[in-house]
Image (cartoon, rainbow, N blue to C red; front, side, top):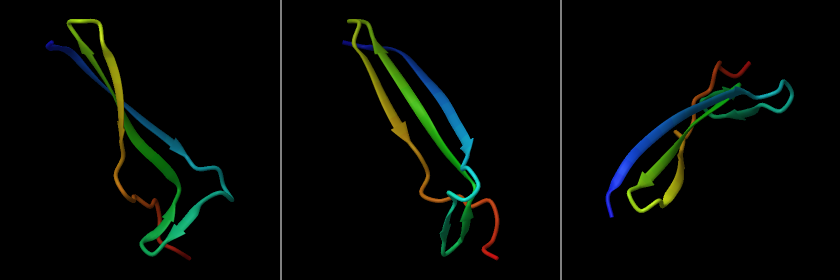
Length: 61
């Protein structure tokens, strides 16, 4: 079996106001991730997901 295709799909969206999470490094105003689709020559398809730990958009007030 061989991998024939890998596709990365970035996903980013703003967190609705009032649903933000404030962390020690700031207030998160968006979420980011990457979806990865892997296809093989035998027709097997798999999906994976990855994201960084934290990426706040602004400092806490």
